[in-house]
Length: 400
Ligand SMILES: *Cc1c(COP(=O)(O)O)cnc(C)c1O
Image 1 (spheres, rainbow, N blue to C red):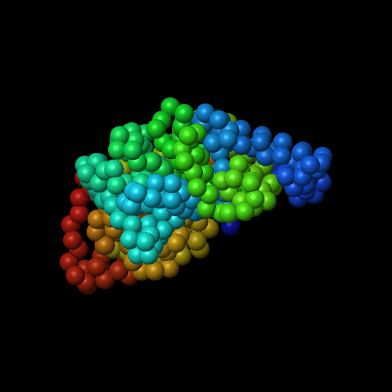
Image 2 (image 1 turned 30 degrees about the vertical axis):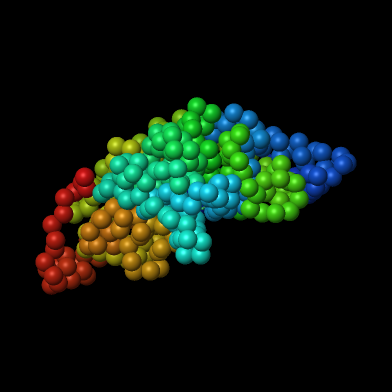
């Protein structure tokens, strides 16, 4: 059976060139980068090269601005905890209602255990940030504002360069969780006021368990992993050399394929969107159609369960997601769709298709053929669709 992987916002396949680049660092090049002999110095050279490759991908001014971490979650945690520690007189933080749990769980924890005031900025029906609420929350009491570059469930992009300028005006730091944006949209940090940025290897065809935090030169940073002087004292622990080298290679490949992402990948996504909307009634796109990641399609089908759709797609060899992997398994619609006030009748039937450069036109054809009959069958079973339940509520196909 043909299998189609369209869950690249959850994780990507490690590129074969990345695996090849990593292998020597499990075998001959096993040295510790801190050692004062040849085994160490060849490894520290490879780490420096990887740092420079990441610098190039995100347009950092200096390679020292890149701190390697264990992934997106650690980078997000480190950014916020560091900011609170560096400016203890500032006791508030700002974030959005649609952030990844790596931010929202930490924010809730800080509120509960340390009395930190958390401003959770709402979004509109397309997932766009309430800019007035953001401006109103900014004050000299704010240590850091953390707003994602792109949402993992809908692909909606946030105006982070402008938000960073506004934060700077009140002396607050600005961090962005760019885990979904890095490698998919061009990023040039040196021309922005963004102080910190999180990225993760496994979302861009690199390995899992490796990521980085960009820390702009001059930003006061407080290490959250105490130990040796690795990463210039900003993150203790012997470097994950194979992971770092793999992430460097993945960054190189992402930069080389950036144009592909904006053209071929986007065209496949758009064709899938059009094909499904044409063939399936009472279906609409969630997120901001005019300002989205090129690879992400989140489509809501009214009056059915996302879990049932996923199971039946899986039987047809298609891997997709009903939103954030962390929320699937529960019957509540994702916090992202709830924050967008998508009606429950539709949010339950939301399915996310996320492409990568490895997908093909055949993949798109397969989903366009397989999905409409699945939805039709599920709707026949749905008491609401068949008219046996409560009368269907009307909806507007685009949420303003
Ligand atoms: C996947 C993801 C993370 C977490 O990254 P890990 O490397 O898996 O810890 C954080 N933020 C966003 C937006 C993500 O998509």
